[in-house]
Length: 112
Length: 114
Image (cartoon, rainbow over all chains, first blue to last red; front, side, top):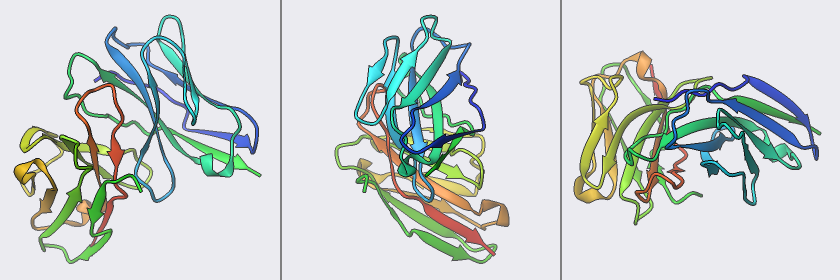
């Protein structure tokens, strides 16, 4: 399974942008980069995914480095509700039964 | 509400007893996953179904654990002869069936073995 590395924790103030980094130096050409987050006492929820190009959706943006060995999840204006553990996960297109493998993620704290 | 339902939400059992959890996935989702999560850790993969076929089981899944998905709809996870180390949150997830998609997770069943 391809591995990702994330900081254990990050802090932000409300209404400020947040950049959550993820390193995946052993990524293969068919790995998609997925982000999930887990709010307290909830199951994980999907945030965004991408392959090579930067992606935007209503929740966040995903910036992918040109060599694809790192990516950054961007929350444009953090709210208190964004306080969660964020997981960066690689899934391989070739194996379409590939499961999500979670690491320990980044715990994001948001201060008022 | 993600559309994935798990029952019960909480279960307290005595060591040595058997427990069974149920997961109802989103109806058109043909893939179903079970995960276990302990405090401070990310979810750990346990097993995976495509329709009614159990395609993969983690090495973490001892022979006391069994999962079924009859008719490719709901799934059950049974733990026999529970041990205190089985105390965890058990999460179920479902997805449509293509890798480039999102998985939907239930809120989990919290098991406490006393």
